[in-house]
Image (tube, rainbow, N blue to C red):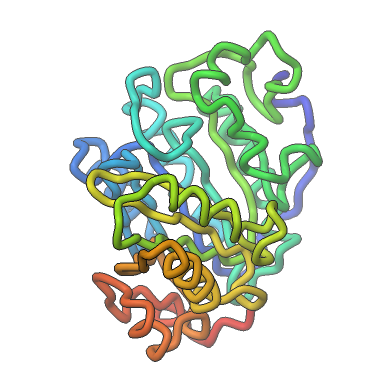
Length: 313
């Protein structure tokens, strides 16, 4: 499909709106590409809050805040740098991935409505396809196809599957841009609420235990609501890696308690907890943070610290 396949007329952004962007890059901070990515973001006036990198995942999660205009400029520059510099045909890592920017979510915060954020991201998708000639998919609340609301559906088969099938299988047709195989992979843009990415590091490096716990606790197995979970081995450690989709329904402490119980039943324990990116203060009060043995903590990881008013989402 061309970038005109879903041409839509979109109004201009809201004044005073603030978006959080959390692009996931298929590289580490030690990679020579990352300084260029950070510089590209900061040059547009957005506020870079955090960069979390994992060598075993071969992945870096960047978090920044800005107005709709600022985040649009930063997004275009980041996408251009990443897709020019990262070759997915030689990329290897433990985490599932689809492109040089595996996923690029926008989160509407203070003064920003979800409906306007969706329109802004859909407009950005058209711009990326037109100006950078890239294959673009929309997921989450910005999805144009219901089967693409879930990121896992868009990412199915990872980069290798996409590269083989793009231009040949209609399920791979982009929402915007060319259906052409490129070594940078596609760009996946979306809109979602605040998501908490959190890793629970087990005392024993037992991958099968981590996978078993993940199967029990995730929502798709009738476990905890609003929770995605997967077991990974990272070097000498084993993680139960979780995405909490709604912390108001399932808190980090609740997930920790459930994993801890399952570990004890297996004769193990949670050794420590790792927060990836930012988190609302209400989702992780100090008493929970201490009980969960959150490693490398700093209060600047509270998203609230960077906002002019408390989060009401």
